[in-house]
Length: 397
Image 1 (tube, rainbow, N blue to C red):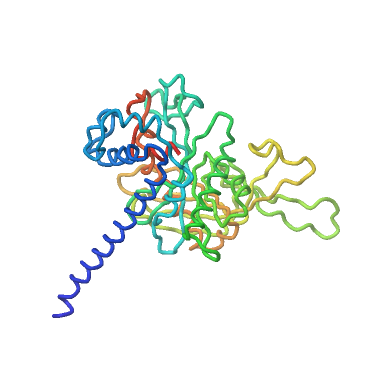
Image 2 (cartoon, helix red, strand yellow):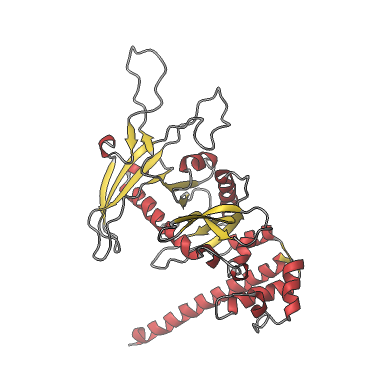
């Protein structure tokens, strides 16, 4: 009887302890955020509180001055935005020091993607690019002027789809997207290591991304970091198995590429190194195939490799190619096209658990859509007065 009565009390104490710790972390971050506001700090800090405490979607700045948490007049709001200054480098360090989502295996899972802040009416804004927008109906794809931002967020486990934004960088007209992404990921990983989230000897950080990125080039640019990249590849991609050893007595140069593995041609895939099944709760049973130690053929015509030294061999960047296919769609779901992630871990294809960790982390990439600012989900005409959102401070960085 005593043990039964003590259980609820222990649970309440645990919940109280968790609540106290959360309040302590929040208070510490708020204090560090205030110290990052180097000019007009009171007005900017009150503005951040007003954005968070406004009970509805923010449509204009004037209404924010009426939120009680702002605590100032209408003029102070515009003065803070015009004359305020933010130490974004210090803010990035403060964000990296926040607790990350906890996974059972202790690994950190990050996602990177590009979000378009559409500015079709801002004719005098500098650095605008034509951003591809997916629409509906006849105009399924449009090019709208705007600002593309590269987002990095930490993914969490469980049924929740919320992500923790860690960094945002605006892409300019002359920027190399792969180079900017590599530099951004390098800085994010360095800040996470400095904050103590990753220690030497720990499992590599998983970074997942869509098919718009060149996983091979990013893997080469980040080869000195403790990371494993998982990038989706298109159906027309071709990979190559390791070159077979040269037969005795055969002269000439040793081959660098083996048999091709064409993603869209089943006849060229051969026998996969791993073939397993999985039963996700949502989409139905999955067929999982993996080919280990496969690589793409890199040449001077590939994007990003034009400046490679002419008398130096192109690198062979091996990884694991995974194919996910729904064998029987779940009731109420249409048949899905197979997905093909490529991971920069060349030996993961021989281990079923390691392969499952990679493709399951890749499927969590779509959680990043939930962590993007509201302005990234707009289509067509976007008035400039509706651009302020909770993640506006991350965009400004």
